[in-house]
Length: 201
Length: 307
Ligand SMILES: Nc1ncnc2c1ncn2[C@@H]1O[C@H](COP(=O)(O)OP(=O)(O)OP(=O)(O)O)[C@@H](O)[C@H]1O
Ligand code: SF4
Ligand SMILES: [Mg+2]
Image 1 (cartoon, rainbow over the protein chains, first blue to last red):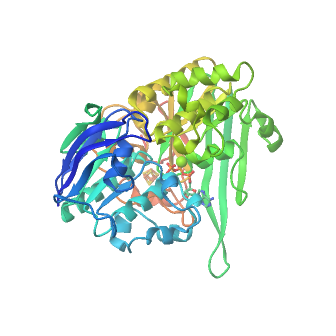
Image 2 (image 1 turned 135 degrees about the horizontal axis):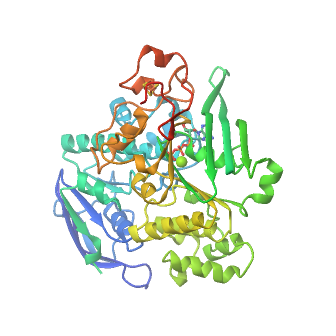
Image 3 (image 1 turned 90 degrees about the vertical axis):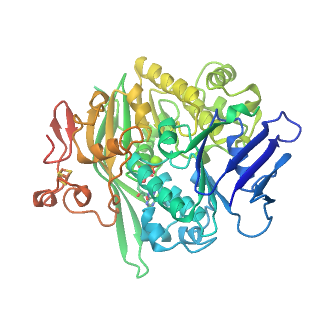
C-alpha cells in the first residue's frame, strides 16, 4: 500500500494559504521525516493525511484511490499532547480498547503497566499517557503511522525503547511512518529520508 | 544560601482495591533538592519519576488525595499554604507541562496580562509575545485556536511577565522551533543571571546542558544523582549513577540503546536500591537498604558502588 498526498493545499476560512502544492509519497515500511518551523502547518498537514481534516486543494490517495470515508482509518496519528488526545472522563482501559484490543505483547513492548488501566487519565504522568496513545494507534489495520513529536515527552531511555518497538512492528507489518520532530538527532537515527516542509509555501 | 530548599520530601496517593483494601502509592520518597539564586537546575529523569509532582508540591497544587511530608523552604522559611497564597504567581511561577492549564474561555493576551505584576501589563504582554515570535493577532485568540507550540509559548510568556524570583518550568520546550527554544532558554539564563533561580524540568538533555549549571536526575520518585553539566561528555565516564549512564547512552546522538525494563511501580517499590532490578552492577548488598545520597567527586549520588 502506498500513501500519496497530491497537490495538497490548505487554509482556514479565507485566511492566507498555510501551504499549497504539497506532494509526498510514502511507501510501505518507509520511514520519512518532516522538518520545518512550527505553526506553519506541519500538524495540519498530518491531520489531513489522517483524515481529521479535508484538504481545500488536492487529495490523499491510498494505492492510487481516494481514501474511504468510513471504517478504520489506515493512517493513524499520535499527537504531541497526549492530554488533548484522550477523553478525560474515561478510564484508561476504556481509552485503550476503544478501537481494538491490543495484546499483552504490545503493552509490554510499550511498557504499559496493568495497574494503570484502572486509573483516570489525570492520574498518570505525561509520558505514561503517551504510551496509551501510541498503543491505540497501532491497530492491526494501521498501514501508516504519523508521529507528531510523539516521544518528546519521554525520557531518553523510554524514547529509545518505544522507537525500537515501533521500528520492529513497522518492519514486521511493513508499516510506513511519517516522523515529525524538531530533534534533528532523532530524525537522523530513524528516517530513511527527510522532507523540508518549508519548500511548500 | 539556597533560595528554595526541598528536604526529605515524600508524596503519596491513597487508592482502594476492589476489596476495599487501602493501598498507598508512594510516588516521591526521601527527595532533597535545592535551588540557588543565580542558578539553573535542570531536572531530568524517567517519565513518571515524580518531576511534575515535585513542581506541584512546591507550588502547593497537588490534588487533595495526596499526602505529603518533609519540608519545602523558600528564603529559609517553610512554605505554608498561607505563604504560598501570597507568593504563587508573584514570587514563585510555574510553567506547567500540560497545555490544559490555559483558561479555555479567556483570550490568551488577557491571560498573560493578568499574570503581569506591576507596570504596564499590555506592553509587557506584547513585548514577550514578540520575543517568542507570537504574531499580533495571537493576543485575541482563544486557546483552542493555538497550535501546540503556540500554546506552550503562551504558557512561557505568562511566567516571564510575572516578575517571579523562582521559575519552575515543567517541560517548557517540546514542540517548539529551535529558534524559539533558543530564545526561551536564553531567557531563563538571563533570568538566573539577574539573581533569580530556575528549575528546568526537561527530557531535552541537550538543551539542558547548554544553559543549566547543575543537573538532578530522578528515578522512581527520588534523586539518584546531582552533577555539574560538565560531567555529561563523551561516553559519560564522569557520570556517577548507572541510571544516569543508561539515560546518556540512550540518547539518539549517543548510542540510542535503551536498557530493558521499566521503573518500579510506586505500589511495589524494591526494599533496597530502587534501581537494583535493572542494574548491571547490582550485588546482594544493594538489596539491603535504599542507599543514601552521598558526596562523590563534587556531586551527589545514591549508589553504594559508584566511583
Ligand atoms: N493523582 C494521582 N494519583 C495517583 N498517582 C498519580 C497521580 N498523579 C501522578 N501520579 C503518579 O505519580 C508518578 C509521578 O508522576 P509525575 O507526573 O510527577 O511524573 P513526571 O516525572 O513528571 O513524568 P513525565 O516525564 O512523564 O512528565 C507517576 O507514576 C504517576 O502515575
Ligand atoms: S546501589 Fe547497587 S543496584 Fe543501586 S545503582 Fe548502585 S550498583 Fe546499582
Ligand atoms: Mg511531568
